[in-house]
Amino acid sequence: MGAAEPVTEANVPEKESERREEEEERDEEEEEGNGRKERMEGERDVEKGEMGVEEKVMESKNVEDQRNFHVSMLQRLNPSNPLRIVINSNTRVASPSPSQTSLPRSTPTPQQPSIATLNSRRYTNRISLFLFVVHMVLAFGLVCFLIFKGIQGLVVASDTVKRKEMRILKYFLPQVEVASLLSITLALAWQKAVRVWPGFMIHFILWSSFFMSLSAGILLICFQKAPTDGVGVCLIAFAIGNGLYACWVTQRIEFSTKILIKSLEPVPKFGDLNQPTYWMLGVGFLWMSMWILAVIGALNFYFPPLTIIALVLSMAWITEVMRNVVNLTVSRVISLYYLRGMQASTEFCFQRAVTRNLGSACLGSVFVPSIEALRIIARGLNLLEGEDEFMFSCAHCCLGVMNSIFTYGNGWAFVQIAAYGKGFVQASQDTWEQFKRQDMERIVDCDITSSICFLTGVCSASICVIVVAAWTAKVHQPFTATLSLLSLFIGYLLTRIAMALPHACVSCYYVCYSENPDNRLFDNTIKEQQNLIKSGRDVVVRTPRVPHRFAT
Image 1 (tube, helix red, strand yellow):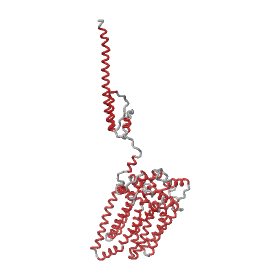
Image 2: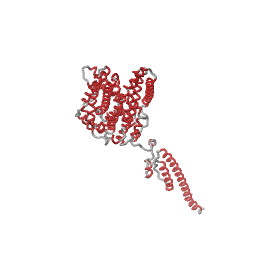
Image 3: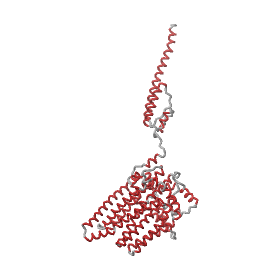
Image 4: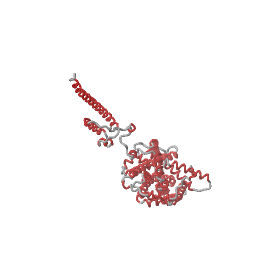
């Protein structure tokens, strides 16, 4: 018995050592199981983009498995993902909290949304686009039908109708075609001159429009016919207002000239920037030729005056849309140059203007001229002074209403429509808010570029009136008043299409400056003008605004 005790005591350490080894083996198996479970969870998290590297010290036997695990993660991860950098550097990062698991794989830079917006593919103002397409279908059908009626009058009508149609074709159609060709020639000449000699042309256009409209009015009065006298008086009244305006804006010319010169600097970088203008003028001439044949055919249809008025309104809308298509094309090319330093393709910008942004061009073509005209009338009333407090309270109220409407629809909106693909109303509001933030309201109100483009159209229209009226009075005087109005209409509309290029360049300069005044492509012209206004040294006559007592 005494000899058995040492044997038992010797076997105890061996059993304990065996138990410890079994426990260690179980612990290792559990650790391996946990490691496999963690790796499986980690792989599932990597697929979701939410992987975090746990802070754990692995055993030496698991080093190879961990290396393979890292390789599989690297193969799944995007090269730009910050997690790949963490894994490659073997940096230990704490596991993400539940609130962090919903974050995206990578954080976008602040400029990415604007870059995406610049390539917006949605159609703007679809209702306006639909209405314009319906209008074009109806207008094209009406024009074709009226042309058929005109041909029918020449072929199967009575001798009296045939003689009447032949007389119209002989003494009416040639003058209109010549007026169209003369308008296109003058339009391209005006645009080229403005681009080459901007400083001189601002003065020249202001006063040549005055003299040309006055001369056209005097010429029509000299015919001593009631219709021509009425048209002549209207032209003379406009010439007087034009002269007063030319005197009033004299102090604004210097600043507007600087902006026009600076805004036209990018144009030579784009050799095909004028291509949309050529295309629109060509299409305008063809449509004008069909349109005048439809006007002649309308004389053989029911209610000729109403039909002709409908044709005139349709032509006005179509040509305004053409002008704004050129405006949108040039605005996108120039705005991308200012905002991103890009030289965009004019052809692609034109395709975008006639497809995705056409609805905004249609809507703006209706509202911008109307709002601008009413705003000018309201400003003119506020320039007057009088004793009647009630009358001028109403004038101030009307001006306040028009200024409020102007923020929802203005010509500056076409820049953001072209650049960001916004709707017309939203672009108008955002653009005006940018002007307010940069304290540029007075500056853009004092710019006379839009007035110069308008007066260029008036000058071309007056020249067309002089040529056509003199010609018609010589060959068939009864048509003088009608053809004078028609040539005035054609000359103005076609010239405005060509002048959309300098107008769009100036608009882009102001709008893009208000978005990023520190851009190296802009100089200090606007900042210096703002400093003059703030210091009270600006001598520019202020544009009438609503006095504070009427602002509410």
